[in-house]
Image 1 (cartoon, one colour):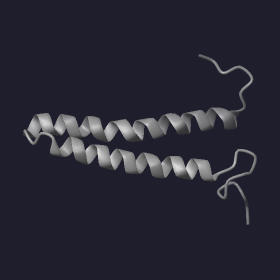
Image 2: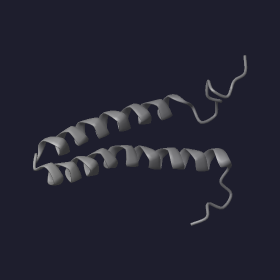
Image 3: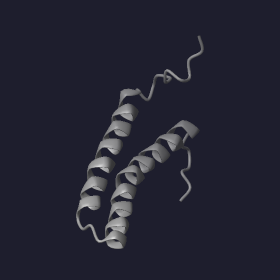
Image 4: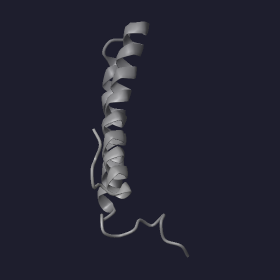
Length: 78
């Protein structure tokens, strides 16, 4: 789907939100695969849930701290 009329900044924000979802799901999938491979059910899945949730929430919090109308601290020049 093409986002008609969306600025590059808005598209970047959508990609950042998609990345948060991947950051939450990927550790769970890796934990499940390792559990299956090593026979350690359910410990690595639980670890993946905790790590994925923590990393995703931290990234989401950092995204929400930046106001859409203000440039981020990385964009400003000294």
